[in-house]
Image (cartoon, rainbow, N blue to C red; front, side, top):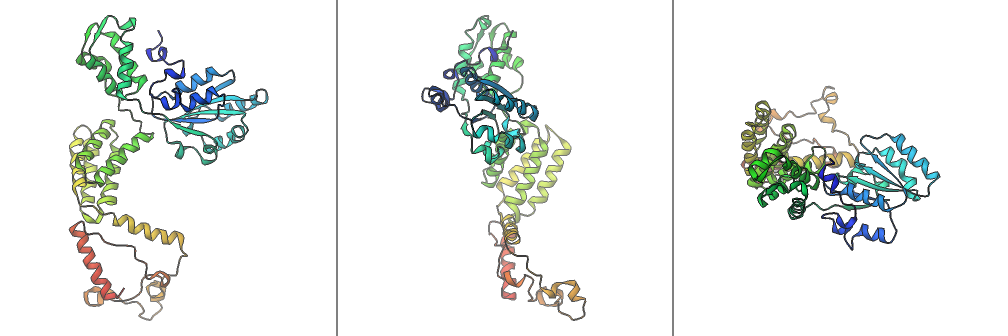
Length: 407
């Protein structure tokens, strides 16, 4: 028998769940179809939101030649074959799954066909098309974001499904329906697959025996997709914002994905980017904690990473290391590369004259001489913050040095 999710796939736009802004009565795609003004567009959203369903419905509604292309597995030669058919057909529909994986030269190849309307593209992607699709082809496509499916939508659908013949031998509690909606990550296809697995049971279905046949919770994330990096970003922003509870929540979600390498790399970056000189000892501590976590592995390493995350979230914050080097890099990138002062060049010093003043020969190991190129001698890159004791001390020391050097 065909899977439940396949059998229940909507056949009409108005049956698509959760995308009223696109497929409802006043939705942009509905209007496009009603006015017979189909144009190339991309559907952008998470898995299980209905992108493929919408594309297939549109394909069936038009009496045009239509083709499907998967950018991650199909070769460019297939596109050549499809484009050749435009010699015989005034317009063809091309559904491109995972369009974000299409190579730039392949995207460029399609440009003239999209430009003159010989090919109408319906692109499908879970990645941000404003980043993943090159500007030339993106400017010729409309981009429509799919809504995330909410819990109420899933619960309503599942309750209707329980009235089907194949579930009449079961008594399914509302708590079970809600548990499936949550554990599916509110993905339609996943929730239907989970519901279908309950056919293995008999009689009353409880949360306990339902979990036994459904399996583990769907985390709704793929390490190659935008959502994963949104989660990492949320962790960093929570630590940067000193919200220890939010930091632990996002750490917990990341731990369930079991990718320790990417978690530890991000925590080490945070230690130097967001805490930095406000608490410089946190960098080595975080590094050691991350190394220990990788050595120990799951599940015990959750305690080590929790300790590091709490330490980072509650530490004083300073981003001066980042802002300082970025200012210097900006000068290097945007200004001429000025000559290094001759009195600090080894080849000049070795010429004989004592043109270099050795700081350790002077009081407080400080002596005035120019180190910066003359043209940018007044440029200041480091401006200390006072959020931590260590950087306050650095600021005081810097001010003393500047007075001595009269900078």
